Image (cartoon, rainbow, N blue to C red):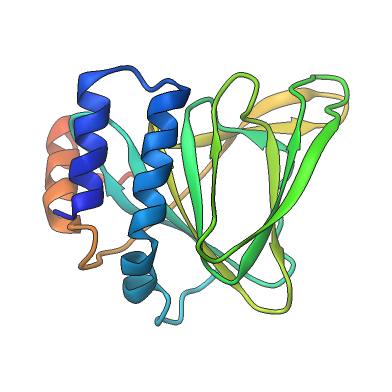
Length: 195
């Protein structure tokens, strides 16, 4: 198991994830970017979401998102803490207020490879992420729980749940085989949670 996972387990195991703990996790993820780049940036991925790791004890997950040209999320929230790292090319992140009628833009920034950001409900969780520039981008996200749905803003309807699917992949950096067996044992089913 990689050091990043062990270090996050240690942080989460000893205290609640506050802003200070989240900043520590953000630092750990930033330090691990070169290893993730070496593992993930030299393959021809299809655009989409990929599950890299799910922690059987603490429930946090690590996902990779591959952004094709022009890919963009709607305004959304996750309902859990998270750290997002850009490992290839760049994305634009625009933060919004949480408002069921009309979320207002707070700020926007282009994050380049090697940069990280975080989300923390309730006040720092609503955003849009968009691929930026001419080349596809890859981001790695650590979230406090598995995201089977995001909370999407829909004009006229406010924020509503919308299902999220992930493809499963195996990498050397994230020891996939150990956590998948633990995941199936913990859910007491043989059906895959990913599509």
